[in-house]
Image (tube, rainbow, N blue to C red; front, side):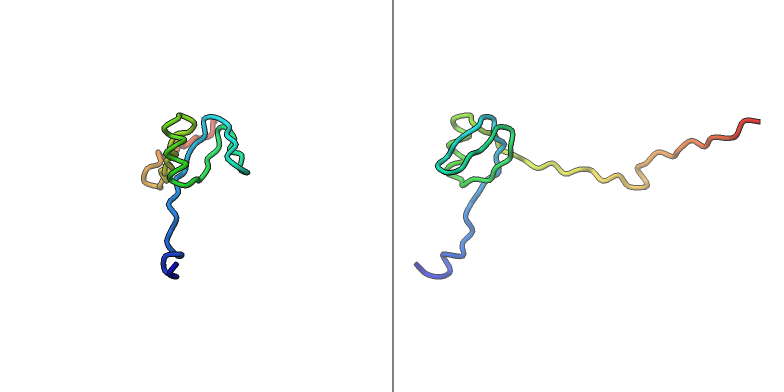
Length: 76
């Protein structure tokens, strides 16, 4: 096998497990995010064991977006 083929990136997917699964020597627990190969991922998705995990970006609150605080005055 040529050297440059060994450096090729292995395709993986991130999945959110809906059920606990034992895959060979690996245990994938329920409600965890796992990274598996595409072949295994397609099988898990087809059977309904897992769903695709999409990372959500958190909106950063900037100074312009914040509402101004109300100033309190001292009682006389």
